[in-house]
Image (tube, rainbow, N blue to C red):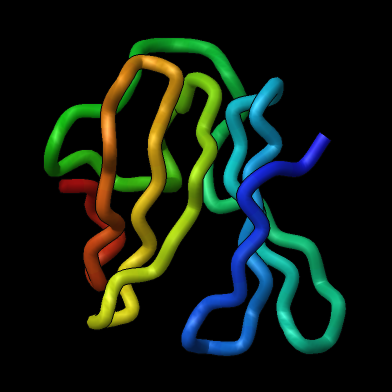
Length: 88
């Protein structure tokens, strides 16, 4: 089930499907989009692109003052999505 739902500065709704390891977005027209791949593989490292990342239990989505998405994972990591799509 969805967790961590938050509206972004772009007006889109972002949330995590914790058990599937996916961060999703619903835009203003109601279109659902996955921002990364489902579970499988190894967790991302700094510099990896979010769309290629395999996340374990993403949750606690927030946006910082600069409009960048922050989230935690079940591996006790906190990631920030940079404007170029890479994780830091």
